[in-house]
Image 1 (cartoon, rainbow, N blue to C red):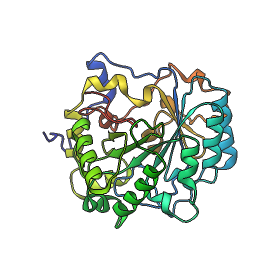
Image 2: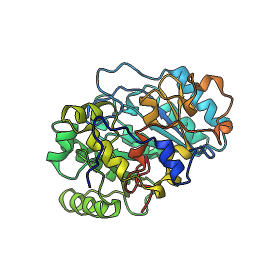
Image 3: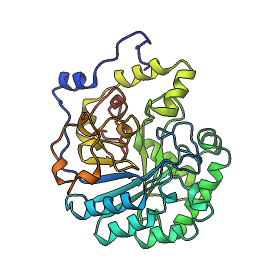
Length: 332
């Protein structure tokens, strides 16, 4: 079903929508995941990228900021997971220090990987490093066909992705019963909601297994956010209002308890704090504060539990249909 909003129609308030369902205001629970965007430098420049990342971006987290991140993780026993993202997080000089430091503290580490970065110069030995530290790898692969992937992510990306997945499989990633977690991420190619996660996972497993011998643990479906490049793409096609209408008209209250912002705090490459990576890209400070809070002003992340979460119209993207978060769908 397509949305009914038009360019001149007022967009419903997300907070008001929550209130109508008896769900607001949105507040954070205990912080269990620290998601760190280590910079916008990337070896790819994908059409849907909400970070607007690419090879020419110069925003990169410094070693001093990375060291402060690790100090906060050490001082915050409630933080169970360090979630590293970008850009391509592996291109940051502090990436391996962050991984090793978090693992020494007994924390789980996630690497949000575009796969092709594993084949770039200077990344020799990276898959082995990830395996040695039992880093969970969450890989972008919007489709199981070459044409669709290359259309969204660039010519030749699908073939390189398959090569990288085979290298990870050879190390034990994605194998049944293996502690080396390998998850794939699907996002739609255009202005539509993802199909049901379970059904699509079966398609991925069949196609990648039969054609390439690839194994993985889970498929995560993520909705494209009307932010940055994807928002510009929608505007050029004259479909921005239509897509927002689709998201609003498919608001699902069952998705709200599983929203990632309930248990996550996002850190920018410069150390500023946000409620999620999407808010970070829109420069919405943590808790809708007037001024950005930074990791340098905190002794621990424990005190952030219970605080308000900044919201805006893009939040309908995380609550439409089966929901969308960094861990995939949030409702059946």
